Image (cartoon, rainbow, N blue to C red):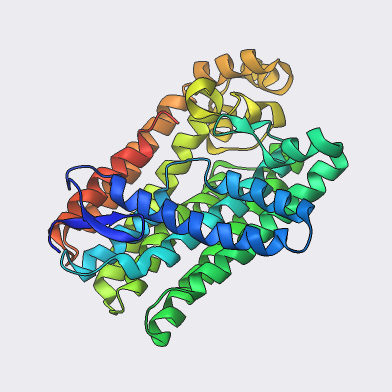
Length: 356
């Protein structure tokens, strides 16, 4: 199967030169659609309102997105499994990562009171339009919870040996714990941003984003290969931590300066909420006394200008470049499939130089 990847639940040939293989993404989407159709039918049989609730959850899962987590997991697996290995058994595990991601996004949007995600209303806004704000918040919590349960169910269907699935599950559990820990620190930082720091903002980025976007998905893929290789695991973790942090640093910049038509989210939400991101913490560290006053009291548009005037965005760009270099250095000598190495090198750029 040297030239094959996936489409639907079948293996089909597609070009290898693209990082985001259409066949792989279509296979994940098809697996999710089939799984969710059965889940919706079972809830519909109880009550039609539950079917509607589940359909909203399904729509949030299938609303697009970069599908970075399963992509990193797939190439983490390919790094050891090689081009001849059959990737079809991985599909439930890869789909589970997207269900977990939807759980995290729905809860994060509720905590941030974000209006849109991927250019569409967020879950709590969808439900609030039906029965008011309190109902919207409650229903969004339940949608996130349901997606997390679904993720567990789908992961359990992965047709690999029990010992392999146990190792995969250990990475998945660690991924979830670190994401929750990072989210808690993120919320905590908003309560007293003045006492936060650049170092603590990077700690949040490492746990809230890096660990479950790049680091643990790669290790998750490595576990799916059913081979223990300490050298590859160390390289993946170093690459994942560095590139994952760079991914969040790019997100910090896009949250202030991104084009909402491209990002699908309003610009300035972080500044409006006073979220102590690395960007804002650097701006506060580099600001003059007059600029500090504006960062504390100006309207959002002016705050964005002041942050730029401090030079903090340029410093964040330097940090992104340094982390990508660090990640690629860690990967350079790892004993993995050359094609997987090449794609992971390209993914480091795709993930950290993206417009959305």
